[in-house]
Length: 142
Image 1: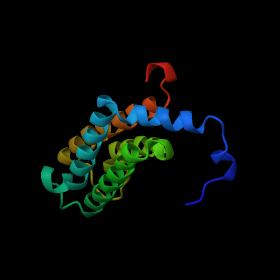
Image 2: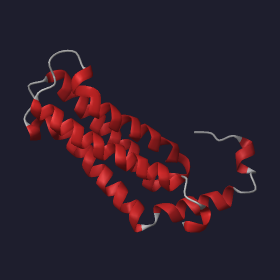
Image 3: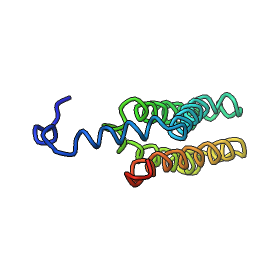
Image 4: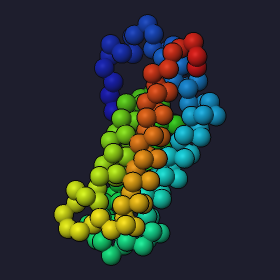
């Protein structure tokens, strides 16, 4: 991956990196990342945990979405200064999880699938928003 030569010469680059490092080293950020990884793993395994694995398209959707959520949120802790914009992707994945039982073709909106997806999607959405909020925090409050 190459970076734009101008960004490396930016006078605030060191300050920005230090700030992002401070943000991700807080207990709150580490808790959000941990909960996000657990949420993503649950979402990936939810068809088998909640008992709607017979709904093939939704089961595959949840597996892929859960793994994508894990990958997206796991990069935030180790390289937050380069990946904090991906928190919006986590928000989108959470929103998609909530509406997926009604959007995917077929009758995927069973009680088990709806409850599981709405709860997991809501948690994912909130955790994504928490990471977005950490990026926008005032420099003095970090």
